[in-house]
Image (cartoon, rainbow, N blue to C red; front, top):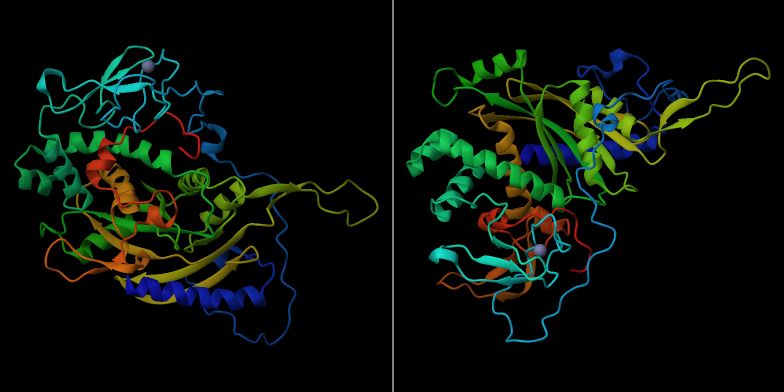
Length: 446
Ligand SMILES: [Zn+2]
């Protein structure tokens, strides 16, 4: 992590002067984008040369996700029903303001905290509370739509199993710790992942960010820790057929915008950039920082491009064809690091479009292939909402005494989601798993 931070800062310094030096640069040939391209341009150019402007493309590069676009966030019905205010009876003891009616035929379906729900005790002496909708007279449990619904095992066990997975223990390890069947652990992970994907979609939208860092990490799916192959062998094997984990992060808040697994191909780059664009506000064009993978450029150009009619060069002949060019707000830069045997050999910086990118390639070890995608969905939420990040903590104006004998707390822990303004507190994993994700975004100021 230290070296990542260092190279990130180094990257920014170099980029600042590169931005000053270059106004509109495009790699003049394909060799120029090879990660082994030697030497940065020297700070003082020997001879001034006009940078060649990027002419643009004659066709818009295709993106599968754009063409089969389905909005991941359904919009609410045009007008919400009137809020219900209780007029008689004693004040309700149980807070139902985080819940919504699930009945598809109810006018109040999906509206959170609309006053239509009342707690109705614990049916059959069960652990979970029953809720009643006063409009449709339907009953449902407070766990409806969560992993706990319909399970007879202890909710504490489920929370601990998922927490262990979030901490990276792996399916078999977790199964051994809690003495449950590995297939049960995998089943719970799969169920939790569906819920957590919806959770991320619900909270991550219309973000206004200054920067987005796109990285790819090696997911080493091997038996390294079992000792059947050495780490070096595993990495060598993966060089031939690597599994890549695609990561998009806001370097300021550390918010993870997207995580996915797939080959390093143009199709995957398009799909991943498309996902990232979905969580950004429509008018947000952040500075994109990537590693040297060529296809990022095409994917960014696809999603941040527009048709431009070039000016005529001659008075006669046909008008020039329109060109697909990056929108003027698009800022994109690459930092290319050469990693050999997990040691950093070289760092190159290249500016694409008028400004800038910093990327990193990190080797990581992921022991089991089963449930990798689901583990990513879990890690996505856990990282953003549950894990306070040391670099994000804020000093408290008044030291807060601890409950035990420890010294007073002087720092306020903060998670990436708090730093990004998505929530005001550190979520426990239990809270996350109990959160019933509403079917559509709720109006602001709830
Ligand atoms: Zn209802």
